[in-house]
Length: 170
Image 1 (spheres, helix red, strand yellow):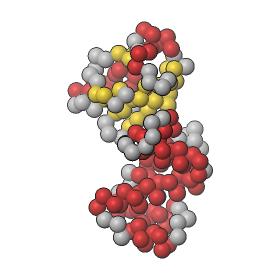
Image 2 (cartoon, rainbow, N blue to C red):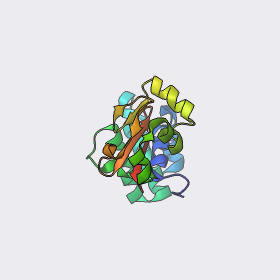
Image 3 (cartoon, helix red, strand yellow):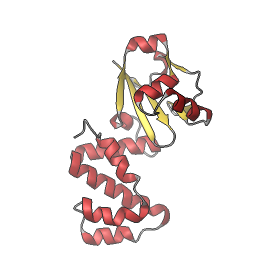
Image 4 (tube, rainbow, N blue to C red):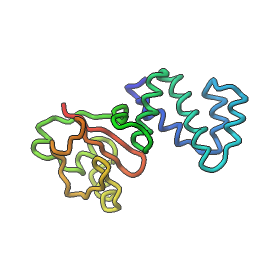
């Protein structure tokens, strides 16, 4: 159910599985031909990423449909490099009232409310470590989000290396 786990989040789950589990998961959770799985299991080092991408795409396609799986893949490529601009629209998003951005929304509050951080204190700690990003740029805890931060109608938040969320104006 996309309301419980978005196609993007589901795709990311499979991308992040342990390298040692990829072959087994391809057998259990996809319909990929056994010969191809065996070829993918032979990959080593950085090439294992290709096997993970295949696992993520196929498992997501079974759960959410091929179109949604391809959107999730495009969003991941856009967020982590290597895709056309605008594909990040498939990543999870949260609506924020326009009035909040007009007043200025505290970055710690935005990360806590979005679920990217468990609390404002967790967001504060991550900011101190340089792990909070707005539109790809690191930000400090005193930063306020405004309408000027909108790019293509959204503000892209990132906590750490892998947690992304788009804030869109409601």
